[in-house]
Length: 92
Image: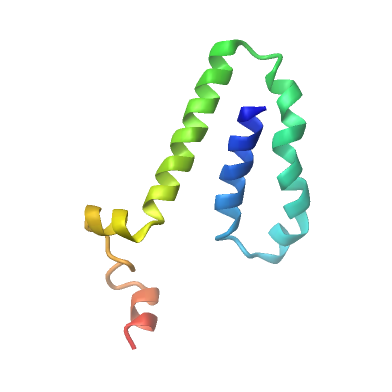
């Protein structure tokens, strides 16, 4: 069950960036997928479940860290990539 929650959290963090019309239609199914797949994961060997849970947790942590301003400043990552369209739009 923990794996389903971590997977759902990963989906929720990824879906905040995607606003395409197709993704909006499938959003409710995408949210249900982690909980539907939990019984399937229970039949897999424990090592696979542990690997999946650790990698999903690391992914969630890394994505969350890179979305915070203090971590981006600590790593020296600019708000917008130099020379990108977003930098030109927000420089005005």
